Length: 126
Image 1 (cartoon, rainbow, N blue to C red):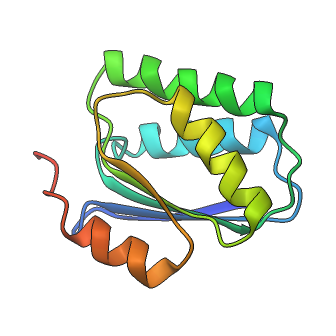
Image 2 (image 1 turned 90 degrees about the vertical axis):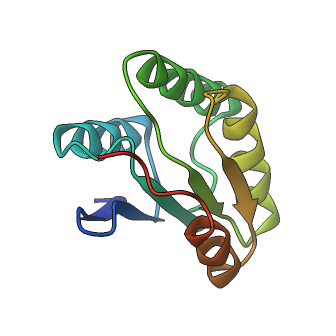
């Protein structure tokens, strides 16, 4: 699987890592898994550092719009995207521009900076 994630209900935190070629179906499975576990409102780290640019800009915008739909049906938590390479950083910006849900979202080059920022975000309501 190209996207793997863990959910900590105690910390209300989701950590996802994309590796290899990531498809729209991989991201949709991630969305479905997080939703099924009741964690869509949790704080999230999504690391795309090691994923080559397999998703088109149109795919990224469509996935961003999907987040907006999730927000209409409930809370979506803060998101820290870790994108160390220039290409992954550009992909993250394309996604972020389309994912205009009312929640904090930031893009980082380093995991520790993303975690510091995310830890400063308020925990979602239970």
